[in-house]
Image (tube, rainbow, N blue to C red; front, top):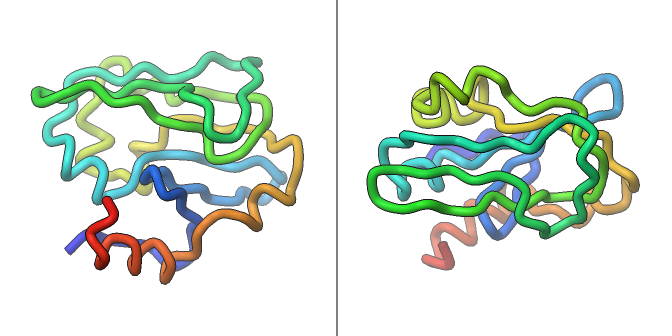
Length: 131
């Protein structure tokens, strides 16, 4: 069973969001997503200063099985892409909710955060097989 930390928000497309004390958010892919993809061999993160819209493909994760787009959960400006993933893509597999984060961004609207799934809602989606 995939881990779904209760303190995070989620998207139907398997991204997670952690609100940070400075008002920005950290984004990554869920334990379920990394497990489905398998061993990651390449991760492309967005560059600092890039503006993204909610639902826009903004990063790529590539495994031995397939490449997959990662979608921005909210609109905003990227403040940082995780630099470690260029040389250590396996961090996403090893620690998807910690060292394997993909990007940090400053949301343009706090309202979009309220539209994300709670941990319970995301777990229900997984249980329904709507993965």
